[in-house]
Length: 191
Image (tube, rainbow, N blue to C red):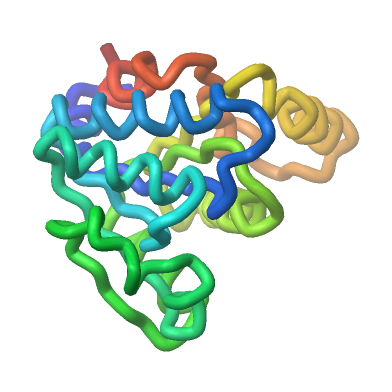
């Protein structure tokens, strides 16, 4: 990564679950990443929820003096408990009409992307951003927080897609696989 890219990373979009998952390590890593973003003065851009891994990373980023932009569709406000999340005070929350608008704004506001463990929504957001990279729509770095090997199977699937000729520009969609939250910011900054 060039120094120009590293210098331009001021906001990182984090895709993650609105659930905590079955392993406490997922929440611990979300909290560690939130702290690292705040300490590096990098704004968190995320899906706007107040529960699960989304809530954990946003609350921790704010608690450490960081900046947070949450973007959530109107229909998800109650489901992801944004309204009742008083501990998200200080979060710049944008209510949008639909998922397409949410994803577009998250893309526009971010200089890099991190996918933490999550469900099909997290996977869908990650795959879309990787598709845009493959199509040459952006060159923003992408990292996978591989807590306890969460993304190993996905990485194997990408390798299979590439070797069987279904990924046309594999060099454009090689996300960084990073095991520990504290290593993500330095990796994205090119350290």
